[in-house]
Every structure is written in C-alpha cells, then in structure tokens.
Length: 328
Image 1: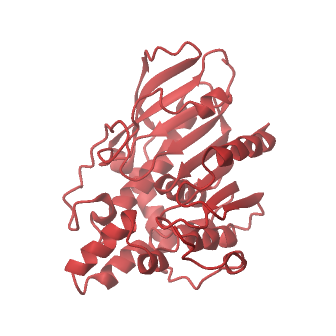
Image 2: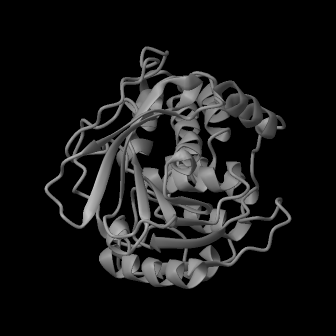
C-alpha cells in the first residue's frame, strides 16, 4: 500500500488540538470505581496443555461491573520465584484462543496473562469465551459501534475497564512481582495497553504497537478499513448521529490516555498502516505523560515500508531487549 498519511518529519512533531471532554477524568474515575471489587479473581484452574516447560491456568476475573472475564495465565515451569508479569491484550475480533498460542513472553521468563475480549473472538484466531451482556445497546452489531451513541453504553468503556481490572487480577495471582507489570498489545490491543497506561499510575511499562483508538477523528477521515470502517458505515446510515458518536469516542481517545500515563513506553508503527493511521500513534507518543508529571523512558520505532503488521517479529525482538534492560 502507498504512504497515505503525513510525512515522517511532520509525524515526529505531531501534537494536534484535542477535543477532550471536561469530565474525562471524572468519567473514568467513576467507571472504574463502579467496577472495583475487593477480590479481583473469581476462579483459577490449572490446565493441561501438553507443554512440559510452561504451566498454564484458566483464570476468570471480575471485569466491568464485576462481570466475569476469562484469561490464560502462564509462567515458566522451572521459575518458582515472583516474576515480572506481562498483561497482553488481543486484536479486534480475536479472543484469547488456545493457551499454547502465545508463548514468547513466557519463554523470555515472564509470567503472562492474556485477556479475552468480551463479545469478540469470532472474526479470526481460535475463539473467545467471554460474552458481553450489554451487546444489545443501541448501535451497530460490531463491537466498534456497539453502544456508540452514548459513552456509558459503549463497548470500549467496558473493554477498557476489563483491561484495567486484568492488571489487578494478575497482581492477585501467586508468583507475580506486582511492582513489575507491563501492558502489551498490537492494534486494538495496543489501544487497550495505552488506556491502561493512562489509568493505572503504578504500571511499570507499556509496549504499544499500531494502536487503535488514537487520533480517532482523523482516522475516520483517512480510512475505511477495519474497525474505523464499521463506524463510518454506521454513520452512512444513521445520518445526523455523528456528533453523538464523536462525543462517545472522545472518552476513548488514546491521546488523552497517553497524556496521563506514567509508565515507561515502547511504541511501534508502520508508516503505511491503513488500519490504524500512523498520525494517531505519533500524536499519542508525542503527548505521552505531558499531564502526569512523570518523565518516563520512552521510544518509538517506525517501519517506513510496513503497514499494519509494523515491524512484526523484528519489532518483538526489540521489545524483548528493551524490556529486559528496563526490568532486569
């Protein structure tokens, strides 16, 4: 695909005006308070995977409104000491799949929690196991437009809350060093990791690649691909609903979460990404921690000839080295 977004010199300094709601902080403070529970875990059961070097548990934790969210928790079989933990978030339309699918972080010596996406899992991969009881909220059938006309009804209010609660869940699991938690994700997962960085002040690090929900208004003007295309398609039918949609999306804007972040961060972006345009990722990175008072370590890696796949395994190799250096 051709380069379709801004030139790299402009991306490197991009810090657009932000239509941020005045009650953004109150909205998320109240949302998270409604979902707080003294015991984040509902159940933890060991599972047999056939893997001799990895131990895995089927975890159910309390997510949005205390509702059950499934996850896989894995750790190296020969490491009994408390380990730094990775909380990973999957891409749009994907569920947690099967427990042996994602072993990179476990093989690197980390504990690893892979959160299921509520109400997703049917588009690719190997399925999910977490329903979304609020799937009948007004809006289109896809998650990106489910409840789009009211921020309190919107799918991503629930999914972002689940992601924050996943950090509380992994901290409650045995053998985890609660002071060394990293949020990780690509695409939708990158957007969730960025939201967690903005909502969990004592997160150690966030590895964010091709994040969804960054520079949302510009992305809707640039691309019809992927989740943004679902929103565009909805608005082609529901003419006049765009202001309500824009208001809802402003509470989910990754740049706003980035401004509030404290954690060290490592970004990756493909400059030919037509799914999550690079101007959104750069705007988030340039705004990162500007309101939090923190001065975290941060870096961004651009891949000029790559699209939504970004740096792929080459980028993951860089993430592994960066995180090892950061956490020890």
